[in-house]
Image (cartoon, rainbow, N blue to C red; front, side, top):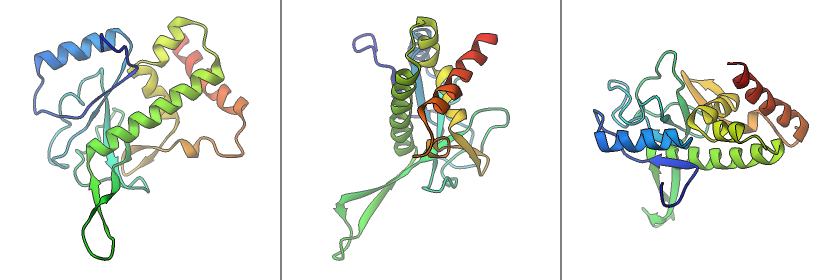
Length: 194
């Protein structure tokens, strides 16, 4: 991060407990207002959210199918916490598994992590463009894990106890830029009142 000054960091691994070097890097990134994502886990509902997804500085991502239905590798949603989920299944056309041209599916939290990072990058770019942010504190907050959590809450819907990231439900072809601008301006104004 020191070298490239990225806005979004994806941590595609999970552990049963914290690691000092990873924690130090997460704190450093948080202090620089970077968005940090990690997959919530792969061991199913009988196990807790893994580290670093359980860090307060990290946005945990769970997997879902294309309809937002929970995948069986997720830990249970946590009460009082954000439980963001997104698509975690992709077709791998380069891997043919039969003569009929069927494709193998790749799935897991690493897929959901990549999808969440892509959605977030586009949302941040769009929001930055429509709001024309000039206040560096507003931009810094918006591009932090806390700011992104607010954006993702706005574009998510509850499904199976998780917050399924679905921006197409917030705006469609019929939604004008003013409506979206007002929505995200309200997010920033709410933060200013805190």
